[in-house]
Length: 113
Length: 111
Image (tube, rainbow over all chains, first blue to last red; front, top):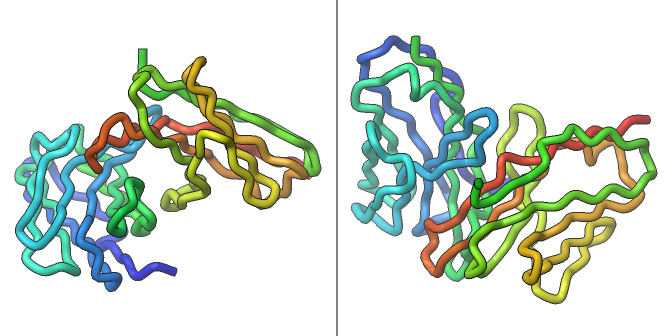
């Protein structure tokens, strides 16, 4: 299996608290992505990165920020969590030359109460 | 109208049968297409790309119909292990973030 891990796998927190999700890869890929998945919706891109300190917004970036200080780590932060951010979050990696993500992490189930 | 639409199913199919489902897209400029499978409470996994001429990978055949703007996935001799949700993905531009995901079609293979 591809070396991509997410942490935590599950988290329950309260509205208004900051939350940080971590994605770690051992594949040395430049491209990394954060998606959220909600019932009845396709995966939606939150933010993506194309290198260390190079990030950009996706379709649903409001309320989220990211950081990438090392190739292997891509962090997603919910600055002040809201109930609408309850979701399953997936990190993904893509190799050079491809369009589609090749591998996803196991996902983080986040509940905001 | 959603940019990428899939019948949510579920499709209940007996083991050994052939099943096919489609995915329609609205942007005629869409450039590339993919199928992923996702098992319950698991991450999506890339199943196959969809080429203009159609392509096959074992029991799986993917086809593209640009005129009618849909892609299809056909599974022959279905196995219990094929039970999953199948996600269609469309690249609507030349940037790597312009992927639009369908919400998926759930397939249940029954013994």
